[in-house]
Every structure is written in C-alpha cells, then in structure tokens.
Length: 535
Ligand code: HXC
Image 1 (spheres, rainbow, N blue to C red):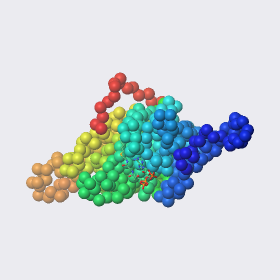
Image 2: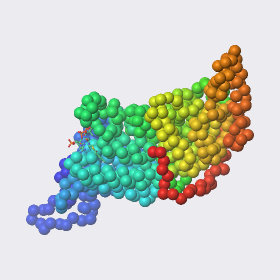
Image 3: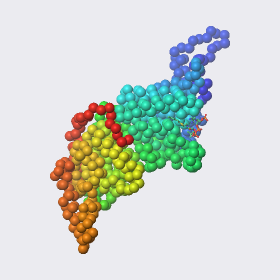
Image 4: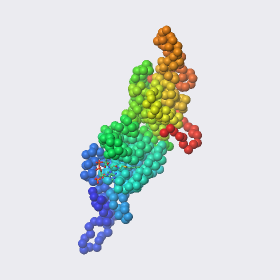
C-alpha cells in the first residue's frame, strides 16, 4: 500500500463529464470509510509476508490472540504524520492502539506494527502511545505493550527521543497503580528497552525477540567483540543471565495465551483486590504427600515446586523468572480461590542458598505483590547466604538488603512456613516474624538457628576440640547436644517466633485459613514522601 493510496478522501466517486458533480451521500461516505479502514487494517501484503517469513505475527494478529474476540476498539487509526498542511505519513504511524477485554475485564493495549516504518517510534507514534497510557491510568486498567520496533525513528531525530521520554515517565507514574505488561515480539533496541524494564513483567519469544542497548555493529566497533542479535539480547539471555525476561516461550501463540492467564491472576489496579472466586479445590484438602516430598535430612535436596503444587489450588502456579536465580522460586498461584505470591527456597539449585541474584529476584517479586495487594506465602528451607569473595565484592550486602527492604515494607497479608531449616541472616530475611510476617508456621522437622550444628560447634568449641584426645567423638557429642538444646522444632514456638508447629499435611488448610483471617488487614503507614530503598 503506498501512502497516496491510503487516504484520497477528496475523490469520492467519479463525476460524469457533462453532469454537475453530485455531492456524495452519507452512505457513499460511509462506504468509503469502510474501504479505507479495511485497507489500512489489512496493511501492505508483501510486508505482512515478510513479517510471517521471520516467524512473527502482525500487530493485529497478535491483538486477535490477546483480546477477547470482537472486544477491540481502536483509537487513532487514521492518525498520521502531518507536515504543514500535508499529511505525509502512513496511517497508524506504525502502532495500533486501543482497548479491549481479556476474560471479560478491561485492558488497554498498544501493538507496534513492524510493517509500517519498521515499527519505529516517531512523534505521532509516541503521542498515540502516550494517549493510551493516559487512558489506561485514568481507567485503572492494565496496560499491555506489544513491542516490535526498530527503535527511535531516525529521520525524526529528537522528537522521537522525546516520545520515549514521555513513555518512560508514564511507565513510572503508572508503576504500582495499574499492572503493566511488556511483550517483546521483535527488536526492542536502544533506549527503547527501558520501557519494558520499567514495567512489571516482560514476556519474550525465543529466536524472534531481542533487547539490547547497543547492537552488535556498535559493539564490534567499540570493543571488537563479535556477537549475533540472539546471543546479545535474545530471550534465552534475558531469561537466564540478565534477569530481564520474566517469561519466555517458543512461539507467540503460547506467549500471548500466558499473558491472558497472568491477567486472570492480577487485579485491574491497586485499589481493587485481585480476582477471586470459588477455588473448586477444597480448602480443607490435606496434603499427606508433603511428608514424602521433603526429606527430614536437611542436606538432601528435593524440588520445592512439588511442595507448591501440593498446596495451591489444582496444583497450578505461574513461575516468574523460572530460569534465572532458580535457587529461589517466585510464583503466582491461587489458594482458596485467591491470588497469592509464593516465594520458596529451592534446595535443588545451589542447596537453596540466598545470593545476589536470588535477592534481586525476590525483592522485585515481593514489591510487585505488595503493590497489587497480593498476599505473600513464603516457604523457607534455607541454609544461609552464599559465602564467597565474589558475592561479597559484587555486593551481596547491598542486594540482600533489597529483599529485606521489600519484605519489611510489605503491608499485604504475609504468612511464613518453615519447612525444614532456616539459618542465620537468611532466616530473618525470608519473612520471619521479626521483620513483619503476620503468621509463621513450622513443620516438626524445622531447625531454626544462627547456623547449622556442626558449624556452630566448630566456632564455640574450637579450642576444646583442638586439645581433645578424641576430637571426632567430642565433636559428635557437642553437635548432638547443640541440636537437642537449640535446634528442636519447638524452640522458636516456645519463644513466640513461630505461631504454631503444624503437621505438614495441614499446610494448605493452615495457610488459607491464615490468609482468610488476615484478609481485612489494615496496615498503618507512617507518613513519608517515600522510603529510600537500596535500589
Ligand atoms: C526508521 C527504520 C528504523 C528506525 C528500521 N527502520 N528501523 N526506520 N528508523 N529506527 C525501517 C527500515 O529502514 C526498513 O524500511 C524497515 O524499517 C524494516 O527494517 P529492516 O532493516 O528491513 O528489518 P530487519 O532486517 O528485520 O532489521 C530490523 C532491525 C534493523 C534490526 C531493527 O532495521 C535496525 O537495525 N534498525 C535500526 C535500529 C536502531 O539503531 N534504532 C535506533 C536505536 S536508538 P524499508 O523502507 O526498507 O522497509 C534508539 C534510541 C532510543 O532507539 C532512545 C530512547 C531514550
């Protein structure tokens, strides 16, 4: 479709050579409008084919998958670049904006159309996005961005850059007010990548989506490194290394289906409770399998996702950042029909220690749940923070403080369950009562202590052990004494640091009952401009 084909509004029907021109009727105009609309919606066919050949859908095909059928209302279809009195850009200006519903609930969307000027962001493109963002915020409805763009429109210079600035500012203003979801389905290069980075969740698709600040060509010039787009900023990189991508998929269809599922778990805004309904899974359902899943020996690994699957409704949960910092599992699920955010140490990966990346991942998840009124359930089985020069030098204190800060700051209902062991600073950070968990339960296998018995004996009895005739015998006796005195399951309960020691089989029931009891929690907040989190 050439630009001249698109809106030749002047010529509405041929005039007979001799007759006086007949003014077009309303019906003529309506027919012409339909024609223009459908031509613009259809778009350029060769460009559509090129998009499909790359393994990508078009912006409108994506919206069809994302939104409930027939629910989409488009804004600014005919808007385009105007220079002086002449409109000289293509309609839409490379972005489709509007509103629709997902599972019957209102959302606002924009989808960049790579077929039009490479989906690049010029002044009009930016203004359309600003408008839909403003409407989403005013309506208190989630904003979903489908990104597929060559970045700032080079020929529009600084106006394109200003367009990005307006998006970033709106992303931040909307943060914690409405859920913002970025779906990266093509290139998202340069400063453009900062918009997804400011939103709550990023979805990516393997092989077709990528995000980077400076591309392979610039890197080659500056550092001499040779790297492909996929190696530099593909979905795998951001899912496993940078921690940017919350979810990754093999194709756009499953990606957009999961965006719909995620929306079913989130409230529309921070004033509404998350959606709830009849769980269809009995609250009283006991979970006897839990006692088999978690071995009593604190050194034997198991997959904590099996524990999560046992206690949540229908065993369904949506893991966020599944492939990054896998030693801490963060997942959204439902319990008793209500959305919960679950954090769980993962003994299967690095014994479930907390480290820099796990702290960053957990902090962001806690913050997101708290912003949107999603109660927190923390399953603890943690040997401590990861020791090491590398961790210390790269800021495990600074990053660990993020998780601590997020928990301490969270005012949603918070329930802690100590499955097995909880040592040292990591015990405190994993939502202990002392930092504000509302209720804490422990299984009868729990060991809460400053450190494990063997390490503790090594510190407390170093001299005695060094001069003993039978150091190993002495060590074994001291370890047994320490464990019996300080690490028995009731030690913390006797001191009010856990509220109850429970049968593992009752975990689901006890957590749901606790969350019900806390559902009317009214936090008292000190007035302040805002805190100063260790960002
Ligand atoms: C104008 C652009 C464009 C851009 C692509 N196009 N990017 N037009 N400004 N930024 C146009 C192309 O000229 C082409 O037009 C059409 O879109 C399709 O692009 P192709 O290159 O044919 O597609 P493909 O081979 O898939 O490559 C996609 C790409 C590449 C990797 C994104 O186009 C590219 O490298 N573009 C430039 C990326 C870039 O450097 N952007 C600026 C980043 S800096 P025709 O007419 O031939 O179909 C930035 C700053 C933001 O964004 C700062 C915010 C604070």
